[in-house]
Length: 227
Length: 349
Image 1 (cartoon, rainbow over the protein chains, first blue to last red):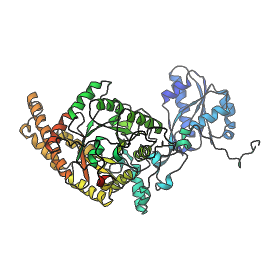
Image 2 (cartoon, chains in turn cyan, red):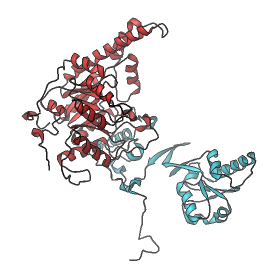
Image 3 (tube, chains in turn blue, red):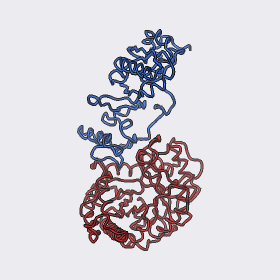
Image 4 (cartoon, rainbow over the protein chains, first blue to last red):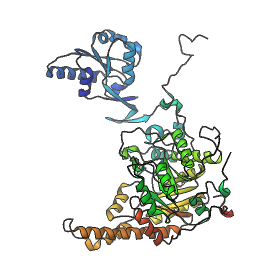
C-alpha cells in the first residue's frame, strides 16, 4: 500500500494561510491503514487547526470529512459541497488523492496535509518499510521475491556492493542489505545459480524515467477510441 | 573501424597492461584529487608517485565528496608523465554521461579504467543529492569492454570512428558480506570483461588466502590480473577504526598490537603530558611501523598464487608509496617497451 506521513502542523498552517473556512478531507484507504490520513487523523488535524487559529487570534471554521477513496473521482462527489464551500481544502490523501481532488474540483484550492513516502507494508506495529519502486518491469522473479530496485540503496542488479556488512546496508545499520536477503533466500531454496547470470542494464523507460506513465486498456474502456 | 593500431594485440597498450602481460608483479597507487580547481596539487602528488608505481588510480568523487574530476586530474597526471587509472562510478552519471566522458578520456590519453558502483551520496558532502545508479559496476564493465571490443555504444549502435580502448578494471571486496558470494561476484566481473581487479584493503593474509583459494578454484586468476589492495596505517586508532567501522575490512589484532607497540615509549602518558615533540615522534614511529606492515603484507601477498600485483592506497599520504615500494623490493619498476608484442603465453589474459 501507499505509506504516508503527516506534515507538521506548522507546515499545514502555512499552507492554509489566511483562509477562514477550511475543509480537512481524510481518505479511508491506504493512509487510514498507516495512521496518517484516515478519519481519526482528519479529526485531529481539524481540531488542531481550529485551536491553533484561536490561539493566533484569528479563529477559523475548520471541519473534517473522510471519503472511502480519495484517488477515485466517483468517491469525491459526496464531499463536493464541503469542498466547494471551503476557502482551502487540506487533503489528507496521498499525492494521488490531492491531485484527484484538484482535478475533480477545479474551483477549489487544495493543499497536501501529508508527505507521500513510499510503497510498502507494516513490518510490525508502528513500523513501515518500503518494498516496491513501481519501476514498471518487475525483477522479483530473479531475486527470490526481494526487490533490489526498491531495497538496495544503489538499486544494484548483479549482487551486493562492498558495503554489505552483517546483513545491513552501509548507509544505515537499521536498513537490511537487500542483497544479503536475496542471497539467503535463494540459498535456502537452492537457487543461488540464478545470481551467477549477468543482468543487463535495466530498461528504465517503464519507470518514471520514461516520462509520466499511463496504461490504456481498450478491453475495459467504455467508449472505445475512434478508429 | 580502428584507426589506430591495436598496439601489438594489447587491449589498450597501457603501461599497466604491458607490465602485467609481461608477467611483472605490478604496483599501482592512488591519487585523490583536491576539493578545489588547483592543478598544482595533482602535479605535486604525481611527482611523489612517478617512477614508483606503474599507474595511479584517480578517484571519482571518493566518499561522495566533490573533488576535481578524475578525467580532469588524470589529464594533468598524463602531462606529468605518470599513467592514470580513471575511476568511474555509477553514482553520478547515467549511461549517456559515462560513455561520453569516456570518449573524452580516451581522446585525452587515458588508457586504464576502473569501474565502480560508487560510495552512496549520503556519506559525502551533498547528502541531499539525487543519485543515478542507472547501471551497476558489472554492467559498466560490460559496456566499456563492448565499446572497445565490438565498437558499439550501450544501445547497440555502431561507433563511427575511433573506439575508446581501455584496459578495464573492476574492484573486489573479498571480506564483505555475504562472504561466500564474493568469489562469484568476482566471477561476474571477469565474465563482464574485467582485465584487472583491484581489491579492497587486505590486512588479514589467512582470510585473503582462503578467498584466493576459491578464486583459483573458479580459474579466475587465469582470466584476470588480481592486484591485492594494501594501505599503510597511520596509527593504532586508524587500525581500530577500520576494523570496527569500515565494512569489508578485516584487521587482525596482531596488526593493531604491532601498531600499539610502536607507540610504547609514549604509552602511559596522558594527553596533557605529551609535548608537541612527543606527539610528532610518536606519530613518526607509528607511521614507520605502518609502512613496514605494508611492506610485509606485500611480500606475503606476492607469494599467493594468482596475485599479479599490488594496489597501494595511501591517499593523502602519497609520500609513503616510495618507502613501501622500495621496502617491498619492487623498485626500480621494470620497463616494458610499447613496441614489445604481447608475450605468447599471456596473450589471452
